[in-house]
Image (cartoon, rainbow, N blue to C red; front, side):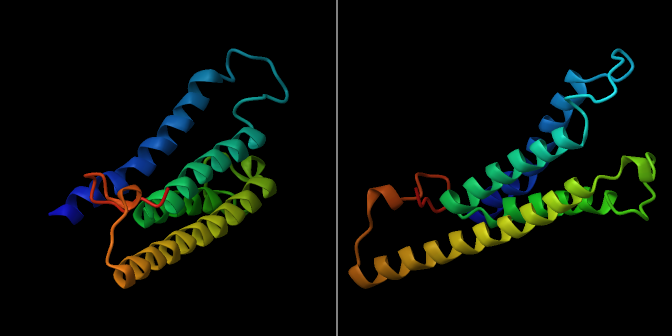
Length: 152
């Protein structure tokens, strides 16, 4: 039962975070109202910033809460962004909407999230081994009623 309670937010929250970030972008930028050649919001650089922010949030949760499910779902979403940046993509914007920098950023972020998740799991195992050998439980490491381990 604890697992079901834990997995539900962890598997839905990444989609909510990414959708919120993207909807903020869509709300702030309407290309039909502006005659900008290089838009500050809505362009490839903005997309790179959104991918970076989503990665920072996921890495934070991986390192402090060992929320591997959150990281997996975020990597899945980033892989969709990466796939749409392929030159042979069937995306509606065609080849002119492809950004090599965004493609590279998603690859780097997916690798960083993998490393963050692995680091979080290793830290959790280390804490569990130390707890098992000493037989004590520190309040700072308690689950605080959420069912998820706390490392921070």
